Image (cartoon, rainbow, N blue to C red):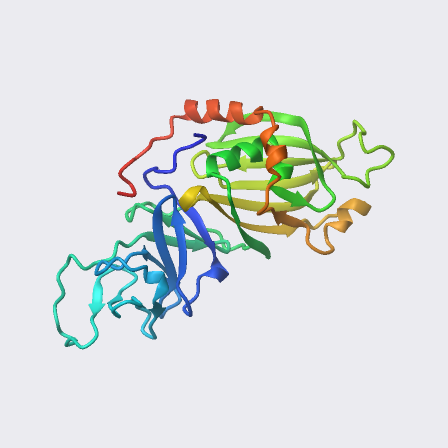
Length: 311
């Protein structure tokens, strides 16, 4: 396993801000922990365990009431998003006191930079916030476990992502290393099939710089030219989901300085894509290289694991 998925105070990027609304609940999961997300009356993102404490029906199959409570679709019980407390049962008096056992588990939620982040630890310290949200975004569901997904991102990123016109090479500008608590690496790249004079030229006019969180695998990618101009920036958040699936939320933006024909092409059409369908035959024969070093680095960082975090 590349990294632990049960860590005290870990913040998982589980949704794009625009995916969480006051119109319809959003069902997500972290490993086998089901979660329902929505916005309350004040527009604040809320998260509860996606199981009604009454008959265990998914709350995400219910609805959001005008007062911001979430209502189970089975028997109509309503819950407050901030505390998870049962607030109302149909046909019962408004001042009725409900047993404390009927409380949905509430999770800590923060929102910044166009992402909604969640911690399974309700007392987790919020991460630093930023207001800048990159304009391009998307969500993909990949039939590959998060550990294998991260290994592939290190060893063969072209199997997982597509940057318009870019060919990822197996050659590194800098080896994977730890820097300020992140795993950092820079990969040499070429301008794909339109490269001139030769597709197999030894010249590497662009590089892909990556900064990866050792616990969540959230990765910032920066495509740069040989003058260190930023051509594209993206943030990739692969979250382990149920049944071995990885949910990937991402945001991206084009750089301000695009010099040359190939770089300018990034500004037209779709410059960045996260693949949902992965070439399994190519993945099978991809030799572990950078990922092996990544395992060693994460082990040396001794990331603390709390197996009770999702109990």
